[in-house]
Image (cartoon, rainbow, N blue to C red; front, side):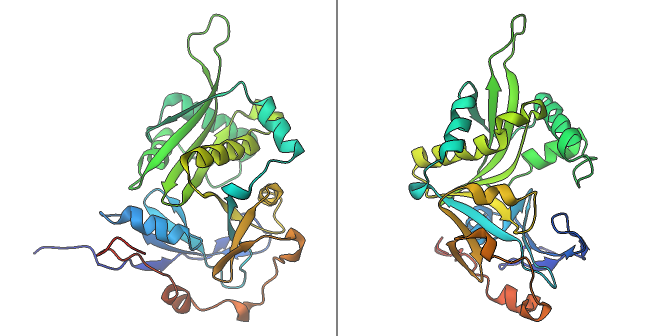
Length: 278
């Protein structure tokens, strides 16, 4: 018997788990598989609707009593770095950028482990081994790149020193920063901010209008830094809008204001795989 994949993607919901961003809350995700010849179209279409990619899965927060997590992106044409960000660019100008195919290396994993052990030792990735790391980097059905930032080799060393890494998807309207990590000893150099600023420059020179940053969560210290970027938009109430004053976005959401899962799925715009249009 011949088995074929369903024409329309199937959506599922995860079981509630403790929220990593806001204490005392539980998160739930709406997700679908990312596979087949239309994977890139689906990734493009759903990224515009607040979804994110993790390996071969697209997901979006769909919590029962909260809608604090909002996808964020920078409008490249309107972005101008502020004084602090200009200093960050200058401070890290010694780094060389290399964009490669999504292939995991031992140097990447060693840097990844130092980063986790220093900054996220109690997070969900804390126990990730080298094989799981390789899967995170390499298992992508869409156009992805590993953007590496390295410093010149020290005297007596042969290879350049890997300092920061970002796994990046190339969408039809921008760059999506899937996951980044950097040398924890260089935390004072604002490397996380620098990676974002450099991706804005990559998008600008590539003619791409947006850089997708993942989720911004008002009230979360982990995600608060994203609001410092100018020309920032958030996906809220089914549309992209200027973030405006971050303080005006409350993390509190009444349970009755969260739409049922079936209604959320019904409003998702899927790509037209027959014509290649969304």
